[in-house]
Length: 304
Image: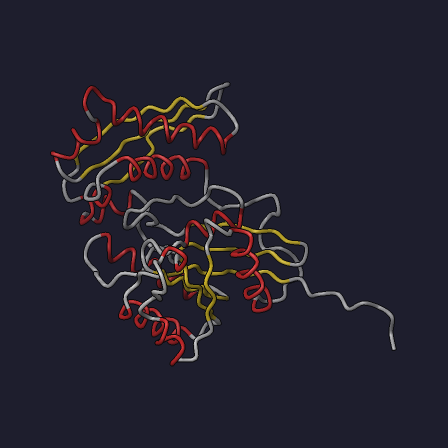
C-alpha cells in the first residue's frame, strides 16, 4: 500500500448566487471575499448587473456571480434584470439559491422550478431566519422538506465565517477540475474601478433616499482620471421624475453632499488613494424604458 497522501484535484468554476431581491446575495458575496465588491442596501433592485467576485483557495478558484433578484415583470429594466439572472444561471457550474426567511411560498416554488429546469447542480440556503421572532419558521420550510430539498440556515451578518464555511463545503466538490486558475490569482473581482465608482455612488443614494426613488435612479461616469496624486471622478445621477431631482440634492445641497461623502469614503478605501468626487443630478424621464439609455448604462445581457 502506498504511503503517499492523495492530493486533492484543483478545481475552478463559476457559482451563481440567485434569489429574490434582498435575499442576502450581495452580503454573502462580500463576506466570502472579505472585500466590498457588491453594493448592499435594504431597497429593491440593489443589484442590477451581475457582479463577479473571485475567491482564491489553495485547491480551488471559486468565481461567484451575484445575479439580480429574480422577478416576474418583463417591462423596461425588469426585462433586463430577468434576462441577466437567467443568463447567470445558464453559464454557472453550480447554483447557490438564497431564500430569505420572509420570502413567499410562491416565489420559492418559482425559483425551485427554474433551477430544476436548468439541470445545474444547486443547493439551498435560508437567510435571515435568525431575525424571526419566537418559534416562527419561514412559510416555505414545509415545501422544502416535502420536496426533499436539502437546505441550511445561515447568517452572513451575524455568523459570517460559519456561513462562508457552509457555502464552500457544498460548492467546491461540484466545481470542474482545472489544470490552473481561470483568472489571475491577484484579482478578486472583474469589475473596473470605473464601474465600482458608479456602483458606490448608487449604493450611497440607495442608503440615503426614500423607498420610491432608487428604482428610478441610475449613475453614469462622465470622467474617471487616475493621473496625478488624486483620483478625479465626475458622475451624473439620473432620476426619472422631475420632482426627484430636488430630493436627491436636498435642502442647500445637503443630501447630495451626504451621498458624495459616503461614496467617496468607500472609493478611497478600495482604491487606496485620495478621491475628488463631483456629482451632478440630471432628469431623464422614463430612462428605465428607453433602450438607448439602458444600453448606455450597461443594462444589456452580454452575447457570446
